[in-house]
Every structure is written in structure tokens, then in C-alpha cells.
Image 1 (cartoon, rainbow, N blue to C red):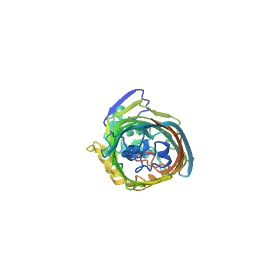
Image 2: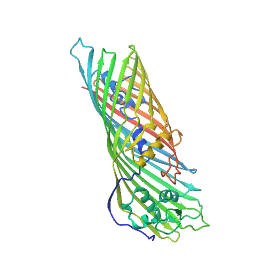
Image 3: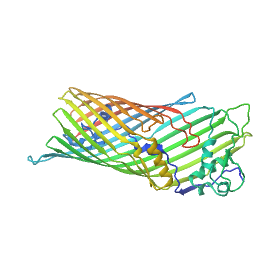
Image 4: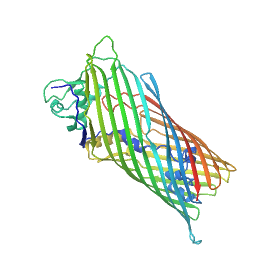
Length: 495
């Protein structure tokens, strides 16, 4: 028998059931333009240049271009503006964050054997916050067709009624838990009130205008620690290797609220609030190989391979739902349980980058990078898991083989450096709507004080997206235009 419920239990529920989505994989597969101010100012077009700590992220051979030992630290201010459009209602949410996003050093060892063709060896260590997850998105509007009831129905159908009535939330797998929440919040009902019933219907018995709000706040980081080694052959060929350790800590708070807006009809459920708190943490490993060749004194060519990143991650999920009936009765389903899911793995796609750069004597340079990455190769593991198998098939179907172009330029005026760049990255989705193409512009300047250098940059990026508030059943979502403005300041010291 359905009952009004306020669960007071606290603790953890350990389960092997999954709740991952495609966007969870893309969170670790997509790269942001991070690093030193010089690197940012030239939009990351450093694959054939080197001599910048962040250039090692593109081509590890770049450390062999350094002449002297060097350390660098970068401070960045990230400003993100998310413009939301949900059924014609427009809202803007802004977020600002200050972070030390890069620190590292390169050490140069010249070969004392003058007869050797191997002229130089370099070793480097560089830390970067590859992705700053701090962000906020708020959407609201009136949906003329769909309610959150469809979300709970999509999980409930196929679940025996007896499972929902004779078990607690903590004893159920993810699919059953979602059905449990909808059932005990009076949002869905069984068609037949027998224990083996597996078909459910909405308690919202009539179409209405649904006023809906969705607030999402994220925080955390995805950082990378790179250990680099490189060498120079005849001052014509530079070869390098990176071994990368990845660390991630991500938190996503989401709160969805719905009210029925049909004044002439009294509906069984008048208001619903559904809160989810997802915490993901873990580590990963990747490697990079690269080479830079001096074709002529002015022309340089680079080629670099970045392997897949193999992550081992852990998820924890906490949920709560509240509904209010037409009589004003409040139904609170708060299990006070944190679901701790079994560890799982993500394999991100590899990346291949080709680069060209032309150096105009001592006046300046122009550089271009072209990279390809096949997002459809992204995988959750273990692959023999039924849920992950279906998710991997969806990614093979929905995700695309993409290209990225980065162009950068630098001009020298005595001790002053003027820089500019452009970046274009294709959408990881074939439909180009779920996540759109990215366009970015950048600029900056630097000043050489001798043993100390200071660089300043500004980078702008814009990308549109339209992801559903929920992964299934109720998949309506707002159109989001995200604009990111980043100001970076780097201090470099030659040792």
C-alpha cells in the first residue's frame, strides 16, 4: 500500500548499478584552452614552436627548444556567462573564479661531447588545471506539453509494484530507486494495484502549462601533472615524451522545480521539487609522443600523438524529492542515503596534431595546429556490463570524428611581444545541437625584463548547447549560449 513517507535513515548504499551518461564521458574527453598566458594569447597554436611550458600539452618535443632552465607560474581569472532560453524565457547566470592554473619548470642539459649529434637533453615537470568545473546555469520557463512525470514513468515501467512497496530506497538499484521516488511522491501510480503489476501511469491526469525551473551548480577540477623528457638531434630534430597523471574531483548540484499552471483545473500534484547531488572523483593516466623538425631556418613542422586517457572513477549520488498535492499536503521523500556506486573506467579518445610554424627572423612568427579526435571511440568499462554496453553503442552512434584548428601569431617590438590567436573546435556530436561548435579569440602581450618575463593574455570562447534536464523520459532542456572570458598572468624566471 502506498504511504506518505519521510525516511529518516542516514548512511551509504553500496551498489553496482550505474547512473552514468554520455555527458559524464565528455567531461573528461574535451579539453579547455588552459595554460600560460603566452599559450592562451596564441590560442594554443604551439605544436611546431615549443619553448613554452604549456606547449608540452600539444607536443612534448617542445621542451627541447628551450635554451635555458625556466620555471613559470600562471594565475587566471575565469568568467563564465550562461545565457539560457527555455520556451522563450531568457535568463542569465554568471560565475567568476580566480585560480593558480599552471606551475612548472624545464631543466636543460647540454651535451658536453661536442662530437655527438645529440646536442641537448631536457626534463620538465608541469602542473595544469586542465578543466575548471566551477560553473552555474539557471533556466526557467513554461513548458506547454511535458512534465517531470515522464522521467519517473520511464524508469518505473517494468518494475514490479511489490519491489517498490516491500523495499527501502537503499536496497534498490538505480532504475528502481527512480521509480521509488516517483511512486512515493505520488507522481506516478500503478495501473493495477497488484504486487506483480509492471505498468504505471502518471498522477498528472491532464495536460497543463508547467512552470519549470532548473538550477545546476558545478565545482571541482580536472588536473594534469606531466613528466617530460626530450632531446635534440643535430639541432634539426626535437623528440619528446610525456607521462601524464590525471586527477579529478567533480561535484554537480541540480535542483528541478515544477508547478502546474492551469487555473481552471485542479490537478492531483501541484508542485514538485527534485534535488540531485552527484560527486565524482578518481584518477587517470595518459602519454604523449611528439617531434618537431626544422625544415629550414624559418620553417618548422610538428607532429604529436596524445594517447587515450584511462580513468578509474567513483560516483556518489544523493537524491531528494518533495511534492505538494492539490489539498496542500506535502510529501517528502528524503532517503538520507548516499549511493556509492562500484568503481568504473572511462577511456577517452586519442588525439593526433599536425603543426606548421614560420619564424620571421627575430621579428615574429605565425603558427597553425590542426588536430583530429574521434569522440565515438570514447568507452565506459567494463564493456561486458549491459548498461555500459548500451551507453557505448549510443556514443558510437551519436558522437563524431572531429577537427580542431588553432592559429597564433607573435610580433616583437624590442623587449615587447604582441600576440593574437584564433581557435575553432567542432562539436563532439554529429547533430551539432546537443553541444555546438566552439569559436574562440585571444590576444595578449609580454615583456622581457631579462631573467624575468611577464605575460598577460585575454581569451574569449563561445559555445551553444541544448542538453535535456534529465537523461531519459523527460528530456526537454534549455538552449544555452555559454561565453567564457579568461584573463591570465604568467611570471617566468630563467635559472
